[in-house]
Image (tube, rainbow, N blue to C red):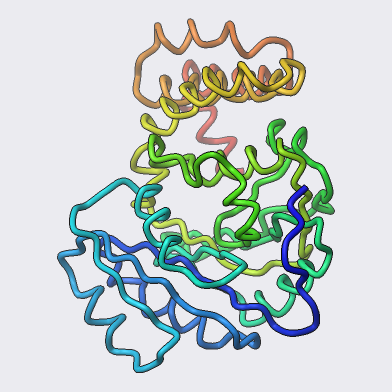
Length: 307
């Protein structure tokens, strides 16, 4: 469905979309992980979303024509910024690196050749979850990651397509009515992947880890959990009209569980119990029961966690 100019043995240009708002703390590490790539044909499209720190100076301090700086006139949400950055990109492949994450040195070398199959619209990979506070890391998936037409696996939540691993064939993104949906701030990458997959786009995967997602407690998805839930509910209301209902059963159960967890953490106990109705009889129900255990027996649960 998404046939385009065939990618041959010649290295195609990869446009690396780097959106930044006050990212000076980690920015240099992210950029250096691009410079260490064993794949050379790339460009960085740096979209400065009205930063007030030293991010611009750090980026402009690199003397390399592959680094292209753009500044937004007004601060926008993340997906508006991504679309603006993509408009400035020249590559037929689009990759993404947030300023607080970083790549393995051979990420592009391992992933780009998978696009030689002209039916592939998306390539992703495994990645490390790095907890900066505890200085620990773990591999996000220890299982074989699925490939092909995997819309069910995506909606079921069986896989986590981390943005730090994602590469999209540009023509596949252009085939959508809109690219990254500007109504979303948190779930835009999930939405794009789903819409491409729904149009028949096939997905390939590099099974090994290709990057690091850094958790530092101030990540957008962490700070805006309430907004993430609101956006997910809105997405389900819109997309649920076009997606077969049987594909959304687990998605709805997981959403109900996430809402229950949020309400419990927010000490909104009535909303917590009301949200349990949507969990149904599933493995999510076991998670909810564990949340209830934490609620009524906090001391015992703390001892269990220590064990």
